[in-house]
Length: 93
Image (tube, rainbow, N blue to C red; front, side, top):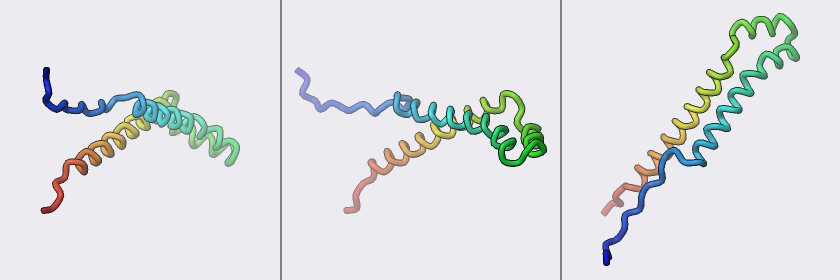
């Protein structure tokens, strides 16, 4: 019988909760990028919409969504690493 203390495995980084938050950020980024031309028409009229549409090409919402996904994962990775580093500190003697 093995009586040695078991070592707890760390939680994997790509778990359902983190991927869910990152996916929600991607959807919000995509929705935000898709709604900008519609908001420009509502607020500023045709000239503003034309100026904004010259910057937002088809497929731009996917770029914004993927950037939001990667940014959310990066923030969560930074927070996980910072909390793991704080847990390993040695108290002063």
